[in-house]
Image (cartoon, rainbow over all chains, first blue to last red; front, side, top):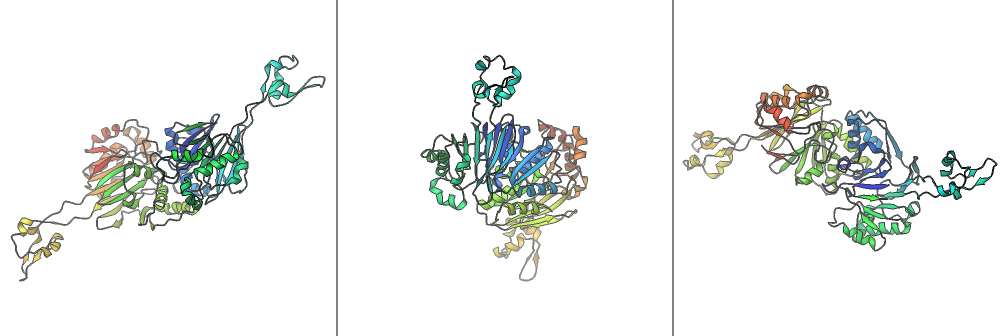
Amino acid sequence: MKLHILGCHSATPRSAAFPSSQVLEIGNELLLIDAGEGMQIQLRKYKHKFNKIKHIFISHLHGDHFYGLVGFLSTLRLIGREKEIHIYAPVGLKEIITLQFKITQTDINYPLYFHELSAIESTQILSTDKFTISTIPLTHRIYTNGYLVREQPALRKLNIEVVRQYPEIETWAFHNLKRGKDFIREDGSLIPNHLLTLPPPPPKSYAYCSDTQYKPDIVPLIKGVDLLYHEATFLESEKDLAIKTRHSTARQAAQIAREAGVKQLVLGHFSSRYPDESLFTKEAQDIFSPVAIAQEGKSFEI
Amino acid sequence: MKLHILGCHSATPRSAAFPSSQVLEIGNELLLIDAGEGMQIQLRKYKHKFNKIKHIFISHLHGDHFYGLVGFLSTLRLIGREKEIHIYAPVGLKEIITLQFKITQTDINYPLYFHELSAIESTQILSTDKFTISTIPLTHRIYTNGYLVREQPALRKLNIEVVRQYPEIETWAFHNLKRGKDFIREDGSLIPNHLLTLPPPPPKSYAYCSDTQYKPDIVPLIKGVDLLYHEATFLESEKDLAIKTRHSTARQAAQIAREAGVKQLVLGHFSSRYPDESLFTKEAQDIFSPVAIAQEGKSFEI
């Protein structure tokens, strides 16, 4: 898995500060998470193929997280998209997009599915052979979900040295061995799987939490994830403003990372009031490390 | 008057090719004409003050001409706009914007007025002490208007050498002389205005025509304008496509400019299929000159 940042600033777009949008690369697929204005420009700039996007996840219906979506969907029509698109978003987005397509007389010529979310409990919303995605209920001024992406467990690896010691294990049996089954001889006796195979690398996981106030409830959901992207709109010096607007400070994001024991923290959704984003790292590092700063065009290996 | 191009490409935005948007500078005001995605990024990039915009004109409800509007209006709220905004656009835009503000729970804290257009005849839609604006009915796949901006006539200039020869003309009389009135002596006799004043420079005019098929009907409306911005999505080699999609070729735009006897032609709304935009100038120059190519960040003195 690899995370590519398209935009990581709050509120109003500027030439070098795009609102929230990112793609998570899993195998040959890109999961698009949030879609601030100009997101399609950023996709082109950083050479991410539109064709690799099939699933889109919108955290909440504030403009800086979805105003770029309708343009992107229109572009897909123009460039002759045929494959389906699935959008997971709070109730309301379908109405907004559908009205615009009606009034602009846009005839979407690819299958477009809306999966509207309204549950307040964490819910698994998608499971493929490669990954699962669940919502992370957040608390903001409006109904909001983060998203938790987990790779499906990989197949076990054959311990080929050991397997060779058993001539009765022929290659047709490998399929089941990789899936954790014991080998059963013709006489009914058994060779346990753990002798014949090695465990796969642990599946990777990624949690996206934006926008939200400091919310320790989410800790059990994101326990031990490999990468946590958590919003840090403010610094502690503006903590009152964070509380009022239901955003987090860098320190609070780091507290969540520490309590959840995540492997790496990436901060984003910065207010434009701060001239130097290294201030966010400094504040968070007192609580948790490793911590990195999101930046347009930056990628994080998971 | 001065025209500043924010975007002049058709359809899908890219890093260096923004969809239609421009501002016309008149005195201390900026008239915003069309609002493709990323328009607010371009305004910031080219240092146009948001505060100078009060009137917004949308030609038609295809996404590449208005998807940037909702984000711009949201930004105005965030930066504490107090002055009113007037939007002139086809019926439907108000519904689109209003729905988005409702669902995003955006409380617009400045007066926002929609003037929805549906007339098929040219109509004067605004008259201030500085300028008037009328629609130019165009023919595209959807209801579309161009816009004709005319400066109000300036005051006549005092011919101060002549005025000095009449000691009875005191300074209090200048106000009326500049407005074209004759000077009337106490004995009732008269000095005609044309002896005492010089005509002002002729008022400037600007016509925006995008998107449209070749439409000679508009020629009487835009007769002799100082600057005509006319769409040229295609070259003559793709004339069939222009007819099918109700767009114009560079040659057709030049024909309109020639028939209307405009002073200068600027071409825009280029399809991304052409790698070299100088091809548009070449094609148009056979028919009309001077012709220029619109380009993001370029300005044209009128």
